[in-house]
Length: 529
Ligand code: G4P
Image (cartoon, rainbow, N blue to C red; front, side, top):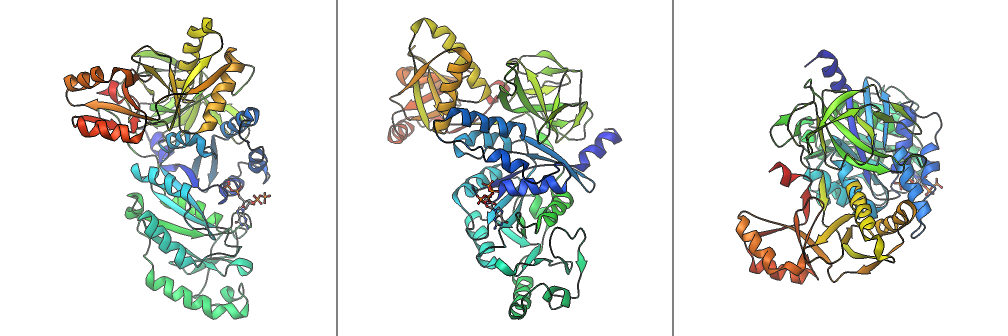
């Protein structure tokens, strides 16, 4: 490994923010960018988010998607570190996009609304992080408002997420009297993010602390701090890195409290780009040779050029402009002539990128989600997942003469991850599958606008879809043969079993014990096997 690579890797922190809508993700993102100097004015991120979509208004959806792309990855520096913050779509109908993005991060910040605690979507996203052992830093937001008791919030995290907590800071007052954060281990305070440095104090009863609190709350604060010190776990770096413990910070993104505490913690404790498992071996982030994988594809970023951008997470080495990479799925070389970095508003040519960085690679459909790029080595990264769709529809085309064009268009949409495409074995029309209904709206609009294909959707007689595998190829063939009318192939030609309902699925699963029915498929597992 070269020193330059080692140094670049050590500085990088690639993370995402997970939260339930309204907990304050946008506000926090904006503040992180502001303190990192990436944006000049608060309000930029917010302004974009305000153009929120309503159902069935596709222009807005598309705009929202466009926006979430321009801000897809936000890079900022703070102290000695380079932070790559990967944005995830706000709407849960695009959940699979979010899950895929989480495969490209090394840590996550979980934002909790101090009045609400753990909400359903936070829980779901947390579970995805846990599957991949992603370390989580918790930010309890909105401490400037009426909140729940901090101990109660910590208990809830421990119980609902089965995750140990270690409060690193403690709120000095709350609601109207929220006046800063107290560093439990260091005996230091910040009266807000305007304090760049921590101010050392003699203890919770010291004057600097009580000066930030109304007289009638001071004793209670001292007591609470004693209890916190006695009852709470101390921070443990290895438990955090293993995903068993979360350091907890309290603050208010809106009123500028605790955000600096959080960035510093990410710099100090969040892991630098991690080693990544490929099918043949483990890839270390500091290796010389470039490896990377595609976790997201975005079309129509620039309406004048019908280009597609593949978002690539670099896993090792140095990705340089102009280099030749090997697309392992096809074995073909690919010239990376115009890799790009994305900032809050603009994109710029990326001359070089290191592990942990995300670059956009313009292409005309060569790259697919899950693809691996290397400098020649035959290896495939695993783990950009496909989730079994929850809504299945047949696509009905007004003009049957255009069936071939529709097939091509659907194939492209599926490669971009807009929808999943299943081709029934019995020759009946294709079935599209999505996780959320909004994805169907996007598909319909895009087929019309980009391919001149007005379509409608018909309910299929299926509502459940599972990838099927078996240890014995014979057994799998037997199952497929016996269920030909209920079998389809996905984009990779892997078989799926379609059932009218869960009951039907369970019934078959009972009868065919040798067959595995999977609700999640990692891309390219078949090709890697
Ligand atoms: P999201 O991206 O997670 O959906 O949340 P967002 O940041 O948009 O915040 C949701 C609402 O909560 C916003 O109010 C925002 O101003 C507010 N908020 C965020 N952080 C804090 C905080 O620390 N304290 C308080 N009191 N409020 C906070 P809104 O009324 O929906 O928007 P706006 O009209 O205020 O911009």
